[in-house]
Length: 429
Image (cartoon, rainbow, N blue to C red):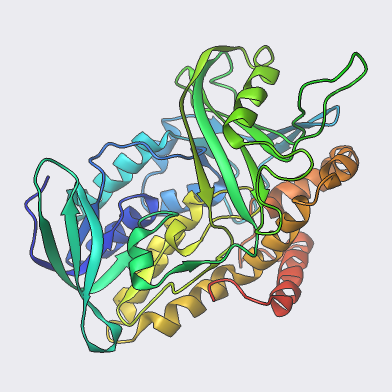
C-alpha cells in the first residue's frame, strides 16, 4: 500500500471503473487525487464482465482501445428463445460497432493502474467508515478503517469528494444516500466455467428459461429471468442469470419465481451440451442492483456519488460499466470547470439531463417484464422479428446517444420525455 497522504484536493473512494476513470481524468488535468479502496488489488467483482459499445467508446477515450482489442472482440448479441436464435450485430451509429468482455479482476486492476500512471495516488486496504463535516454539510475528511493487519482509524482530508464505492455504497449511506425500491431493481448471479465456445465472436442471451419438465409433453414452466454467456477468450465464459423485481413483486416470488443461484445452475445444465461446458461452475456470486437512478442523496456541497453508487445501472440489461466510466469522466469535467460551485443541485440535474429520460422509460418497461406470464405471452412474437429484436437490442442496451438523429433514436427520446413527466419519483430524486 502506498504511504497514506494526510490530505488531497480530490479524494475518490472506490477504485472500480467509475472511481478509476474519475481519478485518471482528474490526474491527467494536473489535479491532486487520492484513489482509495477497501480491497487489495487485484480483486474480483460480481459482474457479467461484458463491455458494450457504449463502454468501448469510454475506454477508447481513455486511450485503452488497443488494450481491449488484445482481448476478445464480439460482433453483437446472439438471442435465444421460444424456438428462435437470432444474431443481432451491434447497431454502430455514433458508437463503435464492436464489444468485448474482460474479467473484472483484470479490467479494474488495469483501470486503476491507468489512473496511477496519470498521477493519482492509490491506496488500498482502507474501508471508508465515516466523514468529518464542516458547517453547511461540506465534507472535510473521510475516516478510514484498515482492512489489513494494521488496526485503528485514519483520516484523509479533502477539498472535494467523489464516492464510487459500488451498489451498496456504505459511504453513500453515511452521507444520506437512499435506495428506493418502488421502481425496478435487478438480482443477478455470475459464475465462470470452461467452454468450447470461449472464442465465440458473439455474446449470447437466453430470454426463455424454463423449469424442469413435469411430464413427457411438458417443456417446463417459463421462469422469471434470463441467462447470458459472455465468451472471454481464455478458455472460459462468464455465465450468469438475472431477474428483475420491484417492491411489489420481489425476486423469487410469484409465478415462475426462482432464487438466482439455483436458477443460474439450472440454466447452465440446460445449455451444457450446446456450449460445450465442462466442469463445475466456479466463483459463483450474486448481487442486488439498484437501477435507473433509483437513489436520492447523490450529492452535497462538495461531494458526489457516481457509477453504481448513484444507481447508474441500465434497468433493461443490468449494464453498469459504461455508466461508471461515463460518470467518472463527467464528474471530472464538473470538478475541473466549477471549482467553487456547490454540487448538491448541479450534479443531480446533470445526471437527470444525461440519463433521466432513458432510465425512466427503461425502468418503466422493465417493470412490465416483472408481471407474471407476460414474457411467455409476448416473447414468441418478439423473437419472430429480426427488425424488432434489433431495435430492442439498441434500446435495451441504451445504445442511443445525443448525436443520433435516426427515427429509432428520436422515438426513444420521445418516449423518455413522456415517461419522466409521469414519474412519481424521477431518477436521482
